[in-house]
Length: 366
Image (cartoon, rainbow, N blue to C red; front, side):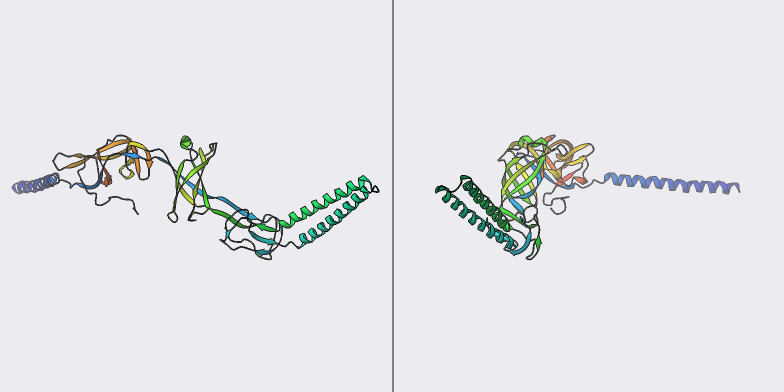
């Protein structure tokens, strides 16, 4: 009985020991296999850094405004008798647009002109009597005053009559009529908008730090996200104060609108061109990775083998932005080869292979 117990313990020990040995053997073989595996190089796109001619500028967003544009309003109330334009008509300066009922004013003008005629006749009669010595001087003066009063009355009624006929203050394109024939309108009622679209102005604002770069006559470029519109212009005015709330200064530029593709109120992107600078290091913005530790790029370095490449993470100091590029003030030198896309799969020391046939990790839509 005792021998059987001893034999059972020995067999159990052999079985347990074999299981433990097999586990350690298996783990060792797996670790050896994994250690022997070399990860393949990560495909990335790359670019060699070069000193370029930098074209700095000030970017802003603005709103288009016509050089001449007004909402036309009724000068004198009454019934609308005629509307002499249609929407989007090309209007000339002084062209008659709307006729308000003026029968009452015409009657008043006729009465005033008749009174003037009577006053002139009375004045002539008084002058004749005075020359013959049978009229008093005061009578002549009173008659002449009546003539001037009658003329003033005629002018006043004529002005009231003219206000019933609405004309264009300048040439341009007129909008949709806001009134109807037979409608009773009051003073100040807007009846249409008139815009001169041949020349357009753009109002925008820039940070106060850029005030020194704003000069009258400076070149600007405006682009619209609608219709692929682009045009050049010049700065015509700079507000001589900074908004204390936004710390922005207002600027106005003027651009040509020869094709009539730009309309008042449109959203525009504005760029003010600044003098070019030589020898600036600039890289694609997609090459820069920003973290809590700072801004960095991956620079491609030779590996241990002859045909091997690896990357080094280099922290840099960034400067100005222009289009899709950003200035590198410190950390890179001309001739360095940097990763421009694919860096989201890299860690310092990773092996890479350059493949510029495909823009890896490109933003959607590009």
